[in-house]
Length: 271
Length: 309
Image (cartoon, rainbow over all chains, first blue to last red):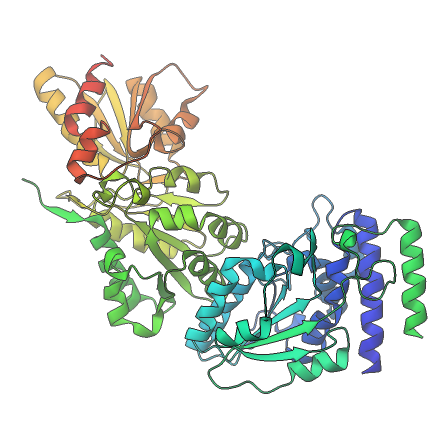
């Protein structure tokens, strides 16, 4: 997996560079989600520019749409669009909107980022795939703050009622939300028990920033008639010492100096 | 006495017909299938019917997801829980990405009746009309509801279909239905009434009576598509008649009246009157009592019209 570890470091550098150029965006929640998104695209799911119009392709829905730079970096790497376009993130007339917009950019399945919505949109995809007898796997990635949205639990009830064993709900449990630690803002209690009570098979990933652990979880066989939830414990701001665990870096981006320091740090780790 | 039928019945029947014709059509409901009349579809095509429980926001998102899989979802609930409760899902998950989802809402307006103001959407047209890329359709009777369902199924994009609960007049003749094209129900030169939904019948009744009794020549236009509005028809009749009345079972703010005003502003001199619900909530009562209470019965409408001469 060393190539994927390197890839994740490259994605982090690319994401911070994009955020530095756009002068706005979400650093912390992007960095925590890198392995979770990379693991889906580079290993678990079958989504490529070549099969983009194939109804049987797998689907990935980034419900925590504010981590869009990570998704854009990976989509460009896969060839959905030119890497040069990454520098247009969040700029006027760009296809790389602040939050993913499916009508603008190839590779994006839905309009997400208004928290909670992507999750139930993904449930709709999984329900349709079942009804159409298509061998489609649907993954959706949520933040642990995002699951405070009620519609997430409406979606979970439906996923369970419709026995969506083709559906995987991943939670990026980085413990922080915009205003502070999730435990202080609105404690969600025992997430494993909660998702189990909603009819999910729950897999816990102790280190969601460890690509091996992530791939191991993604490769678990589906349990018949049961949706699954992957609770991935991550570090907000992962990979850059001065961004890690910092609430203030939720909606902040690096200036030129900070970017240089971050890149140095990430490159050192890469070697 | 003219034949009466619930507009929502036309919706239920149309879905069954459409389901037979088009295997991509799916219907979603949030535990109201016997009220929205989707139950008939559910019985006939159980594999294409999804009752998601009492969770409208989720239903709209699920419809959005299903549309990306090639389905044409008809997402059904009451107007208040669709346009109102699930507004943001309609706006962000359906309209913003321009997905092919039909939001079909029954129980619009005060003729919901006894359930009261909490269940009477008098602002749903306004809410849906301001959403970019949204098409807004308000059929005038059960037959037109059927034609509207067929027409919107062939249009690729988000649509809001507004349907009434209580029995209302069925026009003897079925009019052609073209999305975005208003229907002239009666010609005239002294005044034009632009109406939608169940108020088309009231407009016609008043126009015919005033022609008989006072010799007034009043045109009645059924504006079944409020967005995109048939600006050509609206402008041509308004210019010819110069006296313009709009009539809707909806707030005077943001509905048909404002849509017509938007076409006319800056395009001529008109006497203009919007008749609708005057910026207030509904309440419990029978549909007829409520129409009278809010000035939407034939007698009140006639009074308003006569004042324009």
